[in-house]
Image (cartoon, rainbow, N blue to C red; front, side, top):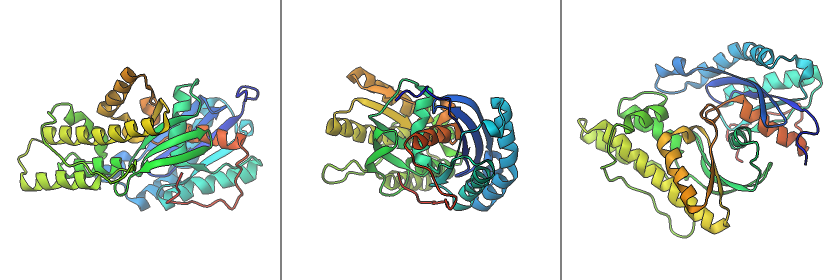
Length: 334
C-alpha cells in the first residue's frame, strides 16, 4: 500500500486517564499537532489519579484542547477526514468524555468515526518516530495498566504472546514510589533516584512452569514494600535501583524467550514505562545480538493523541469504522 497516495488527516482524541490530548496526524506518520493538557499537578496531592476529578477536568479541557490542536495544525474541522477517539482501556468516566465528544463531531461533521484501542495507540507511537517501521515485529507494551509482549502481525492484527497475571509494571513503579515517599507519578521519580543508587538488594522474580511468556510483578512489589516497612532507614536509592534492575531483568528474560520462540528479530517498546532510561539502555543492548530495537520519542511514550490518530488511521485504511453507538470499554483488550 502506498501510504502517501492521499493526505488523510486524522483527529485523534485521548482521554483514557489523566491527560486530555487532541492531535492531527497525516497518513498515520506525520504529526501536524499534538496538544496534551496534563492533570498531573491536580492528582499529585492525592498520590494517584482520582477518576471523578479526572473526568471533570476532561470535560473542562476537551473543547479548548481541540481548538488549539486545529490552530497548531493550521486547519479547520472541515479539513479533517477521520475522527479517532480512544474507547478503551482506561477509566470509564474519562473515556466517555472523549468518546462522546468524538461522536458529536463525527455526527455534526459527517466524518468517519474510528474507535481506537489505547494499547494499539501506544504501539503505533513507533510508526510516528520511525517512518520506515512496518510489521511484523514484537512489541513490549509496558504501562500503568498493561504489561504485554505482542506479536504485531500487521497494522491491525495482533497476538498477545505474554501478559502480566497481576500488577502491570507501571502500577508496581507507582506503588514503590508511593511507599518510599517519592509521590506521584512514580515511574520518573524512581528512575531518577535509582540512578543515584546501587542495585545491591536481592529481590524475588516470579517463575512460571512451562514455556509461558507471562509476567508477575506483585511479588517484587510486595517485597519492596515489606523491606521498607521493616527497615524505614533503608537506602531508598539502592532499593529503587534494585527494584528497577530486577523488573528489567524480568522483562528482558521473557523478551529473549519470545525472540527464540518466534524468530522475529525486530523489537519495539511502547507505553509510559518505555520512557525509563534504565530499561531503554538495557533494550538497546540487544542490538549487540543483531536484534533491531525501536523505541518511541520520549514525548510519545506517555499518553498522547498523536499515537491514537496514527492507530486510527490504520484502522480506517483497514475499514474498521465505528457506529455512533460506540461506547467506552474500560477493560478493553488488544
